[in-house]
Image (cartoon, rainbow, N blue to C red):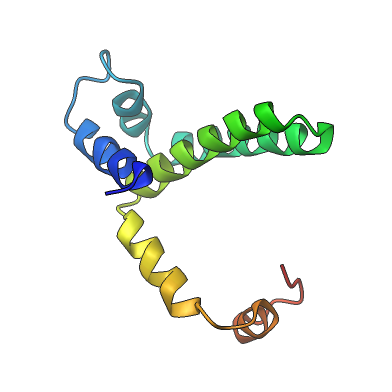
Length: 108
């Protein structure tokens, strides 16, 4: 089991904990909108560090982004396994091809 798998399992286990004793439980109790807001804040912080070029700070902020992404997903009952399955489905497909199939004009 990888660190990200363990993290996802920990987040899932926090659903039933007292929000006063767990940051994750507190976020989940506030609902998907708050979880999404927090994910957005952390994403912006990671972007800022990427632009600054501070590798250590970017690494730290990226870890925050991954954590808050998993919390946001859990708030909507989307599991890490669901995301992994989608990534596997896309594996071997050009990003340009995949974006075109979704009708997006912005290849990533």
